[in-house]
Length: 113
Image 1 (cartoon, rainbow, N blue to C red):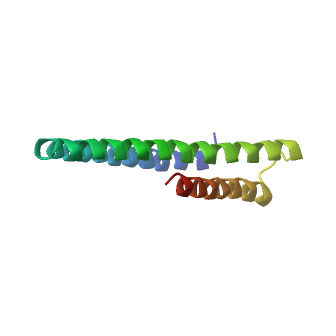
Image 2: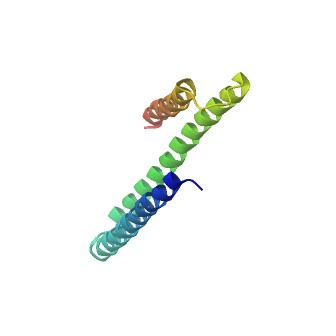
């Protein structure tokens, strides 16, 4: 094991713990807000909120599906080209595939409303 690898562990651990704490706080705040809304809102408002959240989940699934498919095509192109080392061209292809997938999602989401 390299000495540089040992310095990377605390940094990665800090990032992971920070992300987990942030995510838990977000979940708790969202749950609290939903409980307050359920206590004080009408049935129609609650149904519209639930439908909106379902729509947002479907759109998130669509986005990541398109982006991951574009990334898979980029990895396939890298394999087909026979590139075996990380070069700026490989990185550019992967980042470009991510951007292209995001643009496709944007176009599809505008058509879906």
